[in-house]
Length: 117
Image (tube, rainbow, N blue to C red; front, side, top):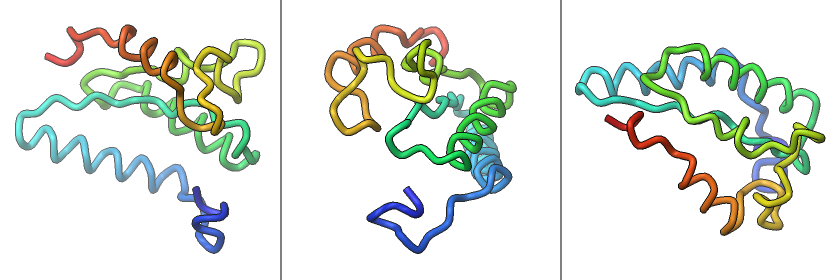
């Protein structure tokens, strides 16, 4: 996380930079006839700043736009409907960033394996 303890002098990437990186991954996968599934960025309120929140929203909108072969919407699955910038409590692991065991089980069960093939 740029600007946090592990990378205090780094800046957050721009939306266009992230999208360009995703497009490069898509192109590389397609060049090898491999399907590529985009996953939206889940909420991360504890690490939230207005800039990071807007970046996450813009990137997620782009991921959902159709350039990937399919999309797994982790954001929609895991966000708290009453507080969309944070995980739904059942997903919470304790670090405000990663799902716990129950959350990972829900994610695994939500994956539509048809999108993989």
